[in-house]
Length: 311
Image 1 (cartoon, rainbow, N blue to C red):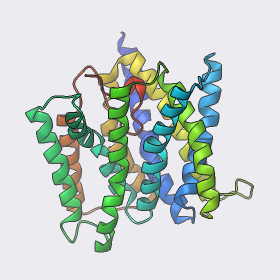
Image 2: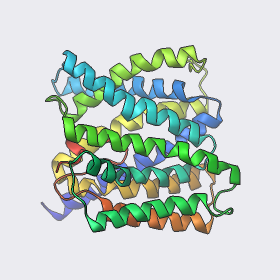
Image 3: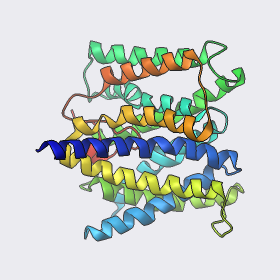
Image 4: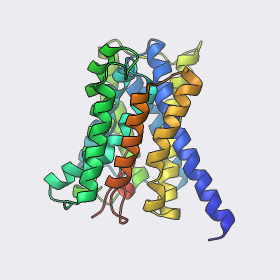
């Protein structure tokens, strides 16, 4: 690999972090603009299904729909998008977007004890130290009264932790059960299609339907950005894993958090206390220590087939 190619891959890595990192501020714009979680989840899934469907078609791939594939799609849709993102969209309306970006870095730290519990990983003192560092970071966010702009925000931190917890379950499920012979794009496409069907009655039945007809405002552009960016960066992430390896691609996890904070400051004008910056340092330390071994990686946002931990 030439130096130019190597720097090109680094640029792709940075762009991935920037893309995933901006989704939290966009979610904040959509929620504060009046949109609710089920409506946002529906359009994220629907837009993702359209974009991933076009990509899958361009690759000349089909979408198997046997009962075993349908079961996989339902499970991934529920634990990978509908449940975690519903919680995340609710939490982002009450917490700074930058804090959400910090908390999402807990995915590998949740994944480690789950993997131990189901017998697909072995205890490691270093990774346990990473888990402790991550938990200490959460304590620094919720314990000091001056850590958050409003002390009542603490009540929403457990809600924000639902998303990384479910992402960790998803990664371990895929590592344990596999993806029925499908690649990452097919799996995510199938989950997006099925998830769209599941989310539609939730959005309509709860009165959270988002009308796609113009005129469109800033909140509508945010919704469009969330759906398009999730699909685009995930497809690029899968490409990067194949081109540069999972260990290199794993560094996206750090960049997502750092870019999320930067975007929140630039787009939303957020400012953080010293406690939050200390929590960020602990989270990044924990992420470094707890990352899976070189044979695999847990994706920072949507851990799926080719990027799930393999041990």
